[in-house]
Image (cartoon, rainbow, N blue to C red; front, side, top):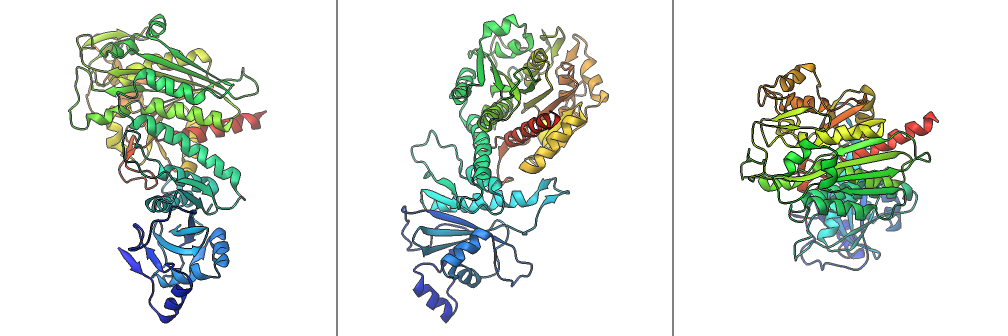
Length: 529
């Protein structure tokens, strides 16, 4: 609903001086009668919450500078529009300056907001991401092709909010939303802004891969898309391993899942050598890459099965994190491993009760064919040890139980390393894409190793009880590295409205946290030298 700002003679006089400037919106489209202007740029400016309900607007430094440029009219109009803006709310003003046909003022919350220990994130950064995303979307609704964004005291967070907030998968629609290009307002924080753009574009790559239909992102098409993204980097090698190679590696668990589909499996292997010393120990990222998961013979319900196009979210996030690391030129070596296949029912598919053999020789009783991701990861984790890794981090949309436990609030982390956990946790505080440590008890190991026909069962013997924990315990049977973490990202796979700077759809989480984690690891290596 549009809120008329003209409430006094002074306001009417101000409106005469500034055509259309007195129209504003708490949240919504352009005012009635306003011609959508595709010329010029939009502008998003931040304002902090006032300590008092009737206090004057507290602009950011960019907001103050713009207000001086328009002779104080922005502050005057904002004060006439009602109570101070709350966090994440906006008001739109038109005609204030010839270079900016529309100015969106966004509420940033408290000025000195920092790390919130109860929420386990930097609240100030999250406020900026949310506010900027909302402001940029309103500029998009006005069909203005370019928007300048106030850095709001943290240009990286502002860039992330803008680029993440404007992203939408509409590749296959004839009618698309207008493309809006966000730019930094001013030049003082251009380096931090560009870093934020790179982080956000990395997450958007993961969102793109996860959102695309399964007939567009098959195992080979996934691999080729990542190869194309990395083609320009001289210090990156991409190996697209075919089924014959997978067979020679004796990855029986992986192949047992893939054999049910007409689509051949692919093992994607990425080598990013960012360290000056290419012999430095590697960080190994492993991602589950089931490009469509029907459940196999243990067929899933049809309702919501379409979302299983994103069951390769682990592969999407770790590969996108490596693309981002390469773009940032992070000084460390990373190996990316993504076993890619479909899980389909057919005459060749795994049957409940079948026993398959993993790369390390362990036999696995497949009691539920819908617990297939851990079979892919078992072989990939075994292979990861070939690189004498500094640490192994795997990510997978592994269990519905993880969604039940944490919902979309955080990624569940199971790890045998407090050092690794600390780095992941501290990275997540900065990105706002949180992680939460889950138990890796022997209690759960006994539930997967007490198996009648094989060394290990692919589900716990108490069925659904502690399902995320027994899945992690299963993976631990294929890990000997002293620094390993399993990230169950099933709960954060998609976004409805929980993360306000992401639109509804596949979330691409926790790509930025993986990138920040790698950046912190590279900094540690540099300091150690």
